[in-house]
Length: 374
Image (cartoon, rainbow, N blue to C red):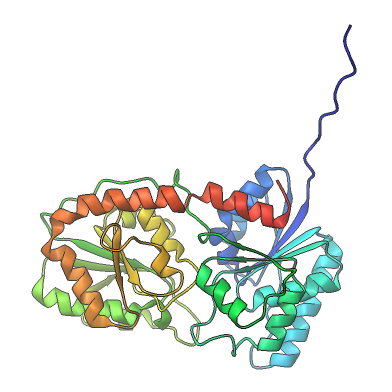
């Protein structure tokens, strides 16, 4: 006799709105996570300022929708805040998401407040870095208000969580989670053999052309080392910026020590062609470019700053130097020029670090739990 058929629980399909500070951030930094969500049957809407059409196509290719939310003029602060929150509230009421994930400062603050105004069921704020000069520029009261409007806060490093805890901005009811950045797709970024050394070592930096990324320190260190190691190559790739600390591409090329590769559609060939990756940032949530370098099997030189210091194991998968210290950066880079025999071991350690700590699959699973989805 056959008993009654047991009921099969079907996964719930959620409507998830992701608010990002730029179209590029959604299409590149959140690509793997969005693909995870759509692959599990959830509907995803990305709300961003305008951007390149190729990024919209990339989002559509992984099953996401996209809408533009214009950012008001930054000098009209009170009016800009009101306009941004009002615009997002209208979008949420129209599309009716069950869950909102806001990322980037101050974008996540607008997203959290607008989501609460629109009656969204669950609001999650992704804090992928705090300003280097503290939170005063964000406005402590409005930041605290946005955190109170959130059900959960996800951090890219423990230092940022500790900072907000110390400032008393995290309520006892707020769920918190720390994930290692956006992770890295270990299948897309595979370990690559080191290039031959006969023509000299190749150093590479990938970043936006901004002062806080350590671009000028990299340039100065390259100029110093080029005089002593003429066969070494120092390459830089990354898009221009409109930030207040933006650096003109032509100023980077001044002096001839740094080869500017421009903005790359695919960074993997450039990573495979280098021996050492350099990222002397002043601090951020978790630098994705450095994670991609680790996955490629490249030792990383970065800084003793929140987020960056988590990337490498000192003297194993790379080196750590103080931020804004050109002399220390040059010494770390020269250590590889003087000891190139250390590169194979550093390469293996870098890949193992990426596999052990930064696998995007584990990061996406943890982030999905914070949203309350599976």
